[in-house]
Length: 259
Image (cartoon, rainbow, N blue to C red):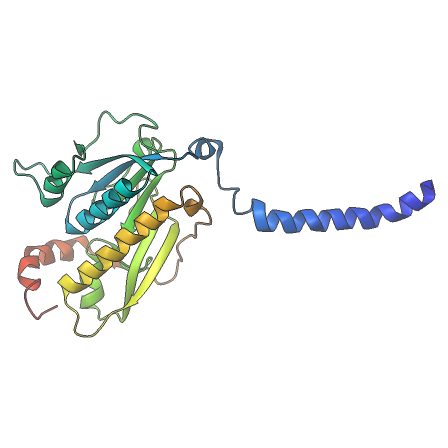
């Protein structure tokens, strides 16, 4: 009996090893990203901080707030804006009417784990390590281009100026101290028609981004698994100087045939 057992043990060993390898590839690899801190945030509802300022951000905030009312997944939803003017911006007007708490940038009193997740849409401010580390699930950004193409400011304008035939929306995790280089959660592509203008394309991409955010929230925290690093190929940037020049004529372009 002892001799037979010794003869069979290599077979048993190899079989066990292969079964474990298959199981690891199909199950553990998709979950290995969860750190102890993230595991502690697996819950039935989440506190979310939304950072945004313009019309693109407003569409996302509205969509998320509608989802909050229709489900129990979002427990708390607050807004951060960078508007220092006395008059409320459009997104602040909506937040006030919807009884969403408004906070001003910069955030000096944000406590660790006060919010589980941060959402950034058209905000324009660099996120530092100190702030990012206060969100157990990190922070997510909606960017209206197919990253790594058109990193930086005004990606929709650059898409049209360069005659791109395809664009889309990228949902990515924020990396500290850098713009638009985070790992990709999801991307959606669309064709750019020859006669489309800036307002129509902006509206289309804004709606897609809002839907992607809600879909991500619905499946937390599993939706943050299997992140994909951005490619090093095809990287393009929108220069800030040109953006500043273009922004001065944005109101004119929105109603003209130039774009």
